[in-house]
Length: 509
Image 1 (cartoon, rainbow, N blue to C red):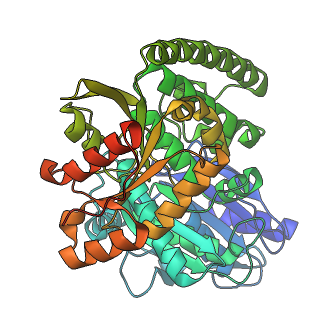
Image 2: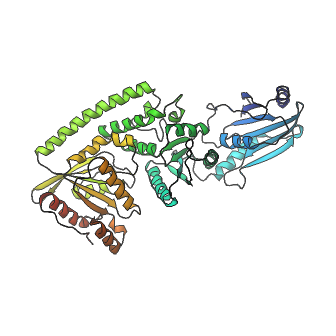
Image 3: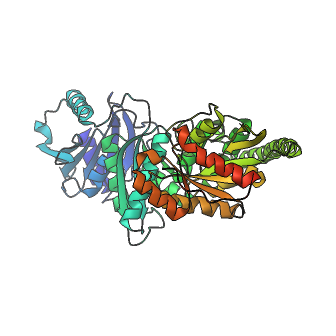
């Protein structure tokens, strides 16, 4: 075969290449130019749990060159078992240069072995078995774990401390989505690359590192445009999602009521519609997995016409559900029962507070967006007074527009609230930013005129002095939702706001 490749390459004055699978079958014959070869898509030979693709790439060079940068990039990016470069003298083979990857963590990423073609002794099967076994041992994660292995990426012109803060939140979101985070990469750039977000060379190195580490998913903190998703997915077979898709995925996982499921699917379809082009490969990779699970997962392959039809159907369903919700609210008004809604940044402890106040058992978990569906409970007082207290979905910075639109019906319940309890996790270093994010969303929803009690939760995690200073600064009440004794001042303040004259309430210490 080497003789034929070199002979044809010489006659045509072009590089000639072949791809060979591990059974020795030639899967592709490729004719390039005098200087390079374009390797076609390899969908029939996907990269699975193994680190190598299962294909050897053998091709000629015309001027007796060593493997060049393009060969090394192909090897690392396409995960070939090896790349072999044949050189020849007027069509007669002379030297073969074999390039193969080295296990992750080695000082060099690859190794080149050069030999006269006729004296080459190379047991390919034994070599590749040993190489893959060594690569598996060098991996930092358990590949038997079925969860997605993610590399988190943040690319921005913002100051480094903001990037680090946002990265920590992205990590929390990823863990809420049940991802294994194997690395976090922050790139502070002077200017955003409109095509790839970061430079093409940097992106290529990042993708290579991800595959070396065994990642299956790239998660960008920045929301990617449809063209950016297409450009990045054209460069790699790894799944690529952004922060919005990650949030949508968490919502899809947590939706239980009909309202929640309809809203999530609607948001998913609205989000993916502008991202469907051609064969829709960027979206098809997500089907059934992270970024594409939930009520809408079976519809990720639908064409635009059918997606638009489905969106129209879901909007009608949402309208019906809204009418039913209006009827429920009307009955509440007839009974003259005031509504108090607990709002706040995600994972502030809203469900825990609802359970503590009403002795109920709403699902609680120390993860972002643990509660998606609105929960309502009655709270009765000895004075024969009662109210309805609701727990809403958590707010978050830069909430995707599609998500805000889809959940507007749920958040409409806040319009009927007599009082809002704005719950803040005082132990979170970013609590000031969280307060601003919640206030911004309230303003967008026209709810900033509602009376609000600002409540700092998790005071048990701070010193008494620090809690007092923060509560005094914000004129807020301090509580620990897991300690019912600390809730008495909050209950008193709720009663004062609803049924008596307003009074100033300090933090319990």
